Image (cartoon, rainbow, N blue to C red; front, side, top):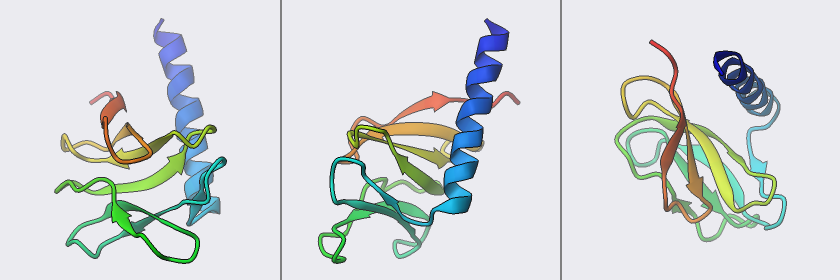
Length: 108
């Protein structure tokens, strides 16, 4: 069980690192929406917008640093990094910003 968790962690981390290094903007596979990070609300947040820049919306609205968002393959969910508990963890939310939940907690 511990080995499986370690393998899943390694795969997720490699995926997030690959995406965050190679892509500044993430386009949803099934929608034309674009994810991006911004400091415009006083701290780093995850936003969504149309390709023409219209309809910009803050999806995370949290005092923690939220960043490095990527779309799920279906475009229905978004994976992002946040330090909401004082430790950088991975969170998942619906594409509209609802149902935010931690999906991976780093061991201390």
